[in-house]
Length: 312
Ligand code: BDR
Ligand code: CA
Image (cartoon, rainbow, N blue to C red; front, top):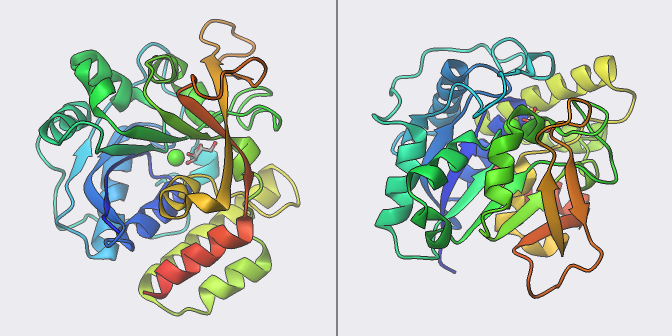
């Protein structure tokens, strides 16, 4: 099986960090071309540093990390540090990594990386506000046809929102960029809250990760314990959902997911429902829509996949 050429666009972020560790642990399946970072959960200078911290822990220093957009395209930046800690990495002790960010803006790096590869080969896993990808599409429109697909963590339909009543954080944080990406015609697989809320870190699943006693597994356990604590304090008694790693799990084991073609538009003007994803199943031509919405996830399968990769 050939490895999927992949760019991970992220805003670490506790669950972004887990997603990165999973992606770094699968070199035979994912050819990680670059990690691009964006301001989101915490400001851009921290997301770039955090991605480099995780890269160093994974021992994958050869993968370039490019720092990207500090601000969304139109609206003001809105962090989510109440969910990720001031550093963005929960209870982890941040440190200055050995290897700096690569030269150049993340959006340009996306353009250059995608244009240098054969058409239809490079995938982007987008797990933060999609400012970098939208900028790349505006800088070089040919990127849209050149990309294989984008796998997005973002949006909500049945579940309602997690940052406002009707919006999921990544889309709310930069709705204009999300609309550019979703209306571009680029094939997209979208893992919204309807999917990720099915994938929860129960005490049993966390215990299985802790039992691995491997460096990356210890970090993942600490990150997930932080999420557990935040979820209990800010949301409710249910175990915390595992959002961003679902994008990587989709790439590694799509059979764990059910996805259906939909129409998808983002609300970009209403102050009340800004960032809402209008997901339309009715009348969507199964062959014609470029967007697939994930409706069902085998959560045990996702945690088994995570365990398998953390086991090394
Ligand atoms: C998404 O928002 C961020 O806070 C998480 O990292 C994830 O990407 C979940 O709504
Ligand atoms: Ca994220």
